[in-house]
Structure formats: C-alpha cells, structure tokens
Image (cartoon, rainbow over all chains, first blue to last red; front, side):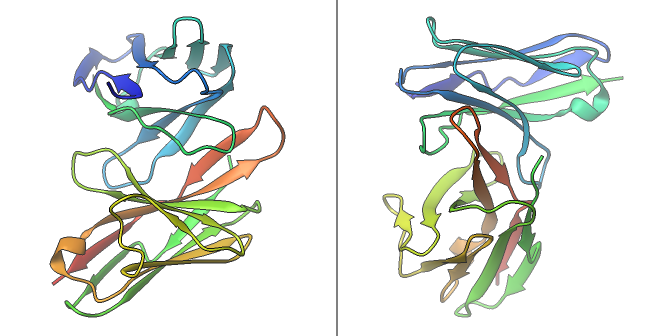
Length: 110
Length: 118
C-alpha cells in the first residue's frame, strides 16, 4: 500500500464548476499537508499548506485535513481554464521529505 | 510565496560531458534543499537531500558519484551530472525548504531544468 493515494483522474469539468480533489494517507506521523499545482514542463507551485487538522481558505481554494480519517481535500471554486494542471498532494512529517500522491490531472473546459 | 530559481532552464549536451545545474533560494535561507527527477507523465522522484555544509543524502538507487551535489551556502545548491549519457535525459527540479516555526515547514520548487543528452 502506498503511503499516499491519489486518484490520477483525468478529471474534466466545465468552467465555473466546483472541483474536489482528494488524497488518503496511511502515515499517522504526517503533520504538514501541501497541495501543489504543476503545469506541463514546469516546476510544482505551492498552492496551499496546512499544519495539522482543519480547514484553510485562500481565495478560490480551500484545503481540508481530517487526521482522524487520514483524508486530505482541496476544493477549487469557480474553476477557470487556467486551473487546468496536475494537482499533487504532498504530506510530510516534521523535517521530513515530501511524500507525493500520484497527481490528479484536471482539465477545465470553457 | 518564496521564490526558487534554477539555471539553466534547459541544456543540451553531448554524451560523456558533465552538466552543472544551479538552484537558488532568492528571498529566504534554506538549510535544506532537495533534488528531484521527473519523467514525462510521472510524478517527481526524489534523488537526494542536500544540507548546507554537509554531504548530501542520496535515495536508494541514485548513484552519488554520478550526481554530485554541493550545498555551499544557505541560498545555493548545485547538481552536477557527471559523464552524462542519453538515459540521464530528464527534467530535474530542485526545491528549498523554508522553516519558520512549528506551523510553517514548506518546500518551494524551482522551475526545473530540462536536460537532453545526445
């Protein structure tokens, strides 16, 4: 079993839709939960990070962490074609290495 | 967010030559930097962890004599691919760790370097 499981998609939604991206993990020691967005042929861009459980909102993006169920979510409201990219969840322990999910390919069509 | 740069963004070289890639944290100090490799349509694969002033820690299966890493300052790490061969052609990405308290432990990635070995 992988430490982090993420549905690779691909996920295709119309512009304006609410997108839900999810990961599950098995390592109880994870304390930091990152979401990265990666466009083709570019380095990953940090979107959101959360320390421990809870919600965090930044503009159209909301990150949720439920440590009791080991479930990580990223919600994108009012999705735009420019949101089309691969989204990577990447939890880690304190001072630890990132553990990447497989990445979900998202396409937002006009 | 913090900015990490990489240079060059792409490089083409002949088989047998060595190539150096630089990774810089522009607006913060990074005691730890990481080097990744990514093949098309695959996720990032961690190659090594680089700590300022000490030897890098390589992941299993990564040849440390082939991929030389130096982290001489808090803002600069370099990856040298020695005696490059076509199978080393890939997308190399670095990241820099920013730690500023218990609830802030993040990694910022560079834009990547595309290496093509002929």
